[in-house]
Length: 129
Image (cartoon, rainbow, N blue to C red; front, side, top):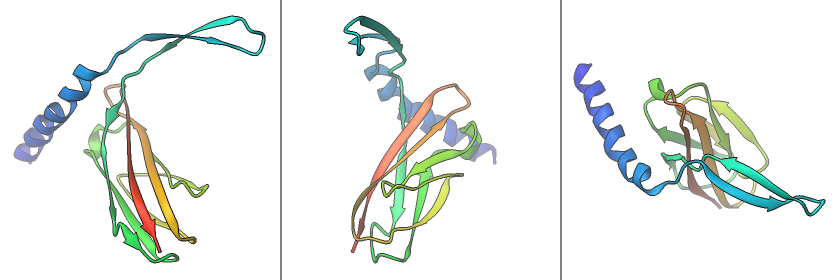
């Protein structure tokens, strides 16, 4: 068990290092609202990218597609929100099962908070025939 924990921490550090070096935090954005006045927004642009695996990637409509977020469950703070791009959402753990009823290409997106206070996002494409 200690080996698994040590390997998970090392992988987490290795996978997040490129993300840390390429993001900008507390970026100031200026926009105009409906009254044409300048509005200043503070935005934290830091996101942790995670892998989402769909199996099978190509499947028949009406059959379940299984999804897995490749991220240690003990590092998530709450449930993972899945957006299946067909008008449905699901809040669950690392595994999800969904049935697509129409053929097409769907971009499944996930979003959750980590115990470190960082928002994690990821996506994958599913092809339904």
